Image 1 (cartoon, protein in one colour):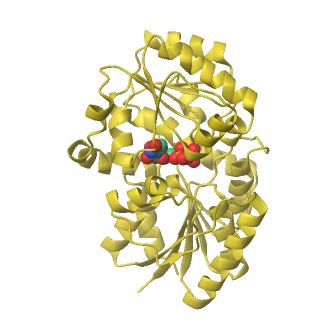
Image 2 (cartoon, rainbow, N blue to C red; image 1 turned 180 degrees about the vertical axis):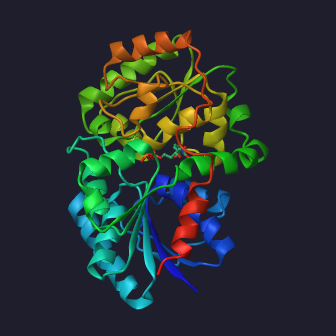
Length: 357
Ligand code: UDP
């Protein structure tokens, strides 16, 4: 039986990993999950394992709250010890966090085939820790599963075609998750009755470039306050952002709620008027659920959403945010275009992993 070690640590990785884990079970691939501990609160971690029926992690490293270097270093050490003991046939990493990079380094130095899901994405902003993590992980992987044509082209531009790395466009596993869990969310979530708002805008803020700059954060809150006077804004707030708002004495006028589970998030996405976010995943989910998105960043990895007019980038400029909000109020779009596959990305990836030599 093939044995794969999956490394996760942060919220978006639990959601992505859920889709592959299900396929591994169907194919009879043994999967052991290492949870690095990057996100550890019940509502940032446990809820996803429970709702999405992700197998319980075989290893919990409990590493969090450190600087980037210390965190990555300790993860690398912890993961290496497990890989030496477990001797898997492959290591699977997702996205662009410190857990991704630590897992990638540990596997590649031990010459264990390394598989990167959500490969090839670029913001071309080297100040983002995520950009560093994804570039390095792509370069030392053996198989790169790319969600989009743009991702494949980014890799080609960087010369990946001339390297002995398999590049496969399989679609986006987050699209798989959105399709598979939407029906369950309808049955299980009661978030809409809890917030009890006939119309609302859904927001999320957690990107370091926004949270770690008091000026950016103040501008974003100002912009959201303005919008909130017209349409209520609901923000499930990331714990780090909540702490920084308190430290900086920034008091939003809009509704802050604790981070929600994936089922609640789906229902909020389905029911909102518009999404305002600096999240990578939430930009796509807005599209999956037929909503326009305003992105609180200067660049995005999901350029196709901007090119096709579903998404507008406004950085932290409150004026641009308001202009984009007014623009989208009257715009209608056809969201049926296929940008991220039809929900079979995980199935395709698992089949290829099953056939690994
Ligand atoms: N998410 C969630 N609850 C929340 C906020 C986000 O379930 O309160 C989900 C969201 O639907 C998406 C993922 O978390 O699937 C995105 O994670 P995040 O924004 O933390 O990371 P990024 O995508 O920016 O890497």
